Length: 328
Image 1 (cartoon, one colour):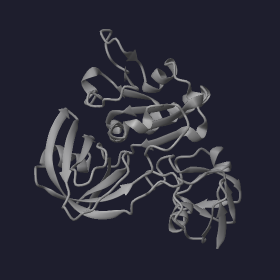
Image 2 (cartoon, helix red, strand yellow; image 1 turned 90 degrees about the vertical axis):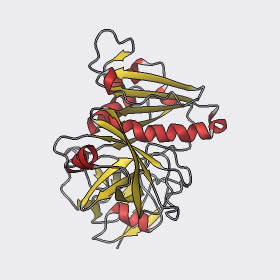
Image 3 (cartoon, one colour; image 1 turned 45 degrees about the vertical axis):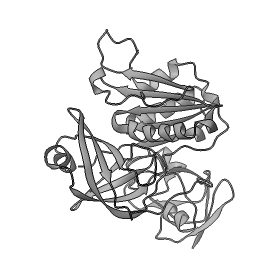
Image 4 (tube, helix red, strand yellow; image 1 turned 180 degrees about the horizontal axis):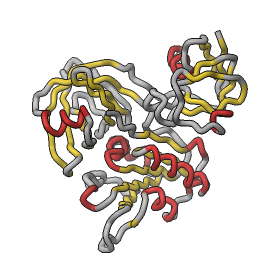
C-alpha cells in the first residue's frame, strides 16, 4: 500500500493495482477528470516525487511529458507519491447512477447536429453540476454527451448531438430515433463546471457541440446573477461557417457577458473574427493574468488554447477543459 500526497497536503492510500484517480475517489477526494479512459488530458498530474506505471497504453502524453507527468485515471503507483496537484475542494459531486430516460423530442438544428430532449421518471432523483456529462446507452452501445441545460429538479435534459460518419450511435440518432424511445442514462460524470475564484474574468471557449456544457453553465450563472455582478464573462464560440452556428446566447440575459463568434472558413461578408476561436481570445482585450478559462471541444483546440492562453499570462491552474473524444 502506497501513500499519495497532494499539493494541498491531503493524503490517501493506493495499492499496486488501483489507479490514482480511483484510490482518491474511494477516499472521498476528487481530482480533475473527464473521459477516464486515458484518451484526453483532463486528468494530467505532475509528479514531484515517486514513480508510477500505466494501466493502459498512454497515447496522450509525449515521452518528454511522461518524465514528470501522468494521467491519474491511468497511473498505478509503484512507490509513495507527491503530486503537484490539488483536489476539487468542497464542490459537491453527485453519485453516479443509471436511470431510464425517454426521448421527449428531437429537433434538427443543422444537417449534422440535432437537439434531443430526454425526460426522466419522477422517481429518478437525478442531480448534476451544470457542465457535466452523461453516458447514453442503447443496447450495448454507450456514448458520452454533455448536458446542455442547467440543473433544475424535474426538468428535462437537453443535448446537442453531432453526426459522425459511420458512427453506430449516430446511425441511431439520425436515422432511427423517435419520440418515446427508451434509453438508459449513466451519470453524472466529469469535472467541467464553474469553480469559485477571485479572478475577475471568466472566459469560455467552445467549438461545435462543445457549446453544450458552456450553455448549461451560463444558464446557471444567469439563475444566480446577483452572485456574479463583479465578474466579466466572455463567450467565444468557434465554427467553420455561419451555417454551423446552431446556438447563440440570445436567451442569456447577463449584462456582463460579451459574445464573440469565430468562424474559420467564412467568406468575406462575415464581420466577426475570421480564424480559430483561440486566436480570437488572444486578440481580445482580456487580462488573462486575472482570468479563468473554460474550454470545450476538440482535443486539438483545447491543447492549442491552453498553450496560447498561458503564453499570454493565464496561470496554468486556471485552465479547465473537457475534450470531446470521437468513439466509433
